[in-house]
Image (cartoon, rainbow, N blue to C red; front, side, top):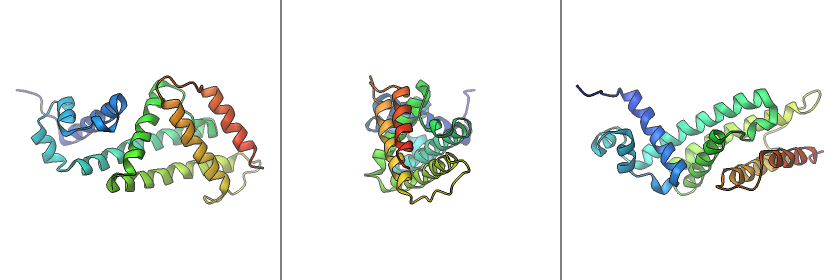
Amino acid sequence: MPYRMSPGERGDAVVAAVYGLIAEAGTDAVTMRAIAGRVGISVGTLANNFRYKAYLMKVVTFDIGRDLTRDLDWRTRRNGLEGFLPHSADEVEAVGVWLALRSLGRVSPAVGDQVEGIDADQRELLRLCLQQLEDPPVRVASTDPVVTRVWTLLQGLWMELSRPHATLTTEDARALLQATVEARA
């Protein structure tokens, strides 16, 4: 008897398939047929679980964004502000996939709503990191211009670091981030 995936396993496999497709070829490569092929299920089975592609992408965006935010939280607890910079190939890939989903969120309202919520969580992590840079820690408001400047810089660094054949190194990114934070005073 062939192996049957539980609904939870199938959902995880679908998220992994979408992640892989985006990492390899961008959001345009994400089709119901391509996802079903990667998961090893029929398009009909996929459609029974995710009736519309927009809903599927909303779920995937939430899962991938939540996982990235969890990873950022863990890394910033260990490395402070530098935890926002990807250091391994897997971290660079995750940032690239997230940026692709953020771009998709600009044209897809369902995905855009998820992106906004996750971005707010990531900005809050950034605010807490900036707050801890002072000795003793100083309260930094989420509306503080330094949060916006550093957030914008981080998005640019993520874009550059996740490009194929990127010329920016993690060390260069770290220096730019440090200079921007030091210039806030």
